[in-house]
Length: 316
Length: 135
Image (cartoon, rainbow over all chains, first blue to last red; front, side, top):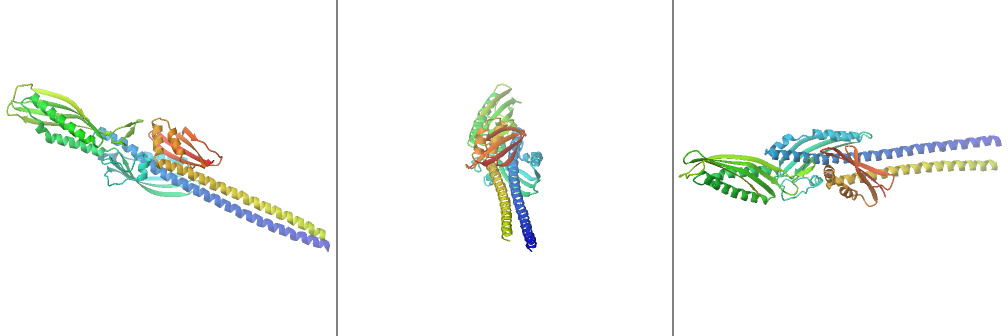
């Protein structure tokens, strides 16, 4: 009987221990599952944070890329005296998309980037630009001399997938940025200068021989140019105009006046109007030329040279 | 009979102790694991915030310009590292076309969070790596 009881006790205790072990294994498994879940949640959260940073990284870098690219394009347009409205035709972000996607792929993120509606327009004071995007470029949102600068608008849509966790982040950003070089104003001012010369040149032509006519024209032209350039310097523009006046006698009382403004160079000198080209900061100058010819008749003609040419430069 | 019972008691006590110790061990390990994951996640978040804020403040643009003009970058890197909370340590690496250009700051712990930021330049890709650890 004691032996039978011993066996029974041993059996019961064995069952109890096995039962406890089962509970322990079960607890351990659930504990591990919970730990795995926590680790997975943490990994997903970290992946989501990483994707969020990558999305903002794309936004800020595209803004920077467009700013630089537009800077270079408007520098070239201004150098050739072309219309700033052509700017939009020169813009494409395909190269940037390729670079960004390659970098993200190397860092475990599959990226699908679409950029739409890259537009540039003349900036007006009423059109507010994005404070953060302006700040990333190191330029203030509010500044007295942005009128006539270049508004940059674009839309970037990105779908980012973390290749290890398959976490996905889809976002669409509107870019409302600005390039501070006032190329639209430079172009307009250059046009105004030529128009005013055209309208006033007749009143500047006075005299009874070629030399007198040329000297009077030179005097009045210089007076006009000095006044014009002084006026624009109030808005932080500098300018230099080189000219050639040729007066030719064609008959006893008739002269041909040729005025050639060989180089009208207007430069934006405001605080932030720089472009980074070939590892240096440069100012943007709008360079054009202008030619006008007119016939001048005198009532009386005095003796003098048949033709005279005068060259000169005016700057502020 | 009394002898058998006392032996059984001892066996049971031993088993319970083993079970208890194992349970405590498993539980303690999980907590550490969890804490480590949370800590790394937090440090990574801080590193990301440092990079985002420095981009928003224009420091990244300034850094790109300095790198492109081949000027001294330490001043900009100091400004970025200064964004790190005082109770944490921060280290920055700047890579240009996958080559290490410069590094700044130091970590105080082997456990750290890391974030990366890229910037396209006229000459290639610049990468900023920010690592943050506890002090």
